[in-house]
Length: 320
Image (cartoon, rainbow, N blue to C red; front, top):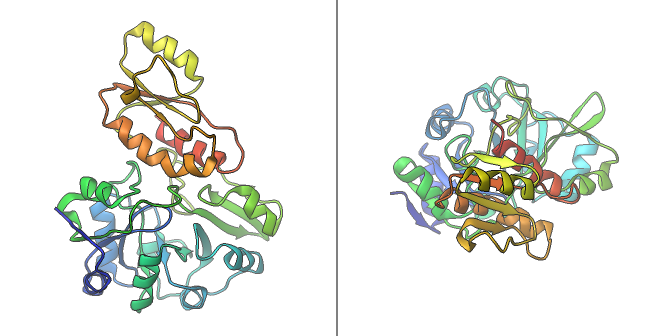
């Protein structure tokens, strides 16, 4: 099995020699490789079984380093970087030639992020190359928010997992770019739409596509448990599946369901706190996926704060 530890020098040495290392970020754990080494980038796609048309995000330690790999940062996006970096924000920017088309799936833009997690920031400061790092899970499955999740999912496929504890945000980064002067959110994530709009004004939110995504994380079916997941009116769904005799688990925002056994339900935040709900989402999906339930029933959250991003993940997890 992959070794878990906190040795930054070991992680840096492996990455410098073209190997992959799982790294902690405040969002989820990433499967990292040298973004300038095409063999390492190919190994990321192969290890995750990720389709080559789904581009990767590169990670750097600060905005000055970012400028080495992108041709420009439009003014509005620079304002967002100033406000939210380091943090769960990815900017889609025109790339320089140093970034291979393999990383960007042939697109002229690259997703760039400055993560906030102290261990990974320290690691990035020791490296002279950016890290390409999608979530450290088999493609399409639930994103990992702890080192053990990576070990359980990728086993011997990665030599080292840098252990940074449980992820603080628990949802992937918000991806923002620009087209024809309009600020666009390509993927909802760890920074809410309200926070983005408080800096740059009204934004356009793109729906996820089913193929040829313009940015990472736009595929319709994604972040999914292996068990079927159904999203809707929880009370109606429970009545329907009781009548069928189905063993079901429930995923709720803030209420517990007295008639459902404790091991077959997960309340994302008893206090109705959206940050806590986001932090618990992938953990909850993983726990219910490993339960004795045949199906997972879930409800949407109110579409405010991080509720929009959480609902985005729930919809994709339940997409047929």
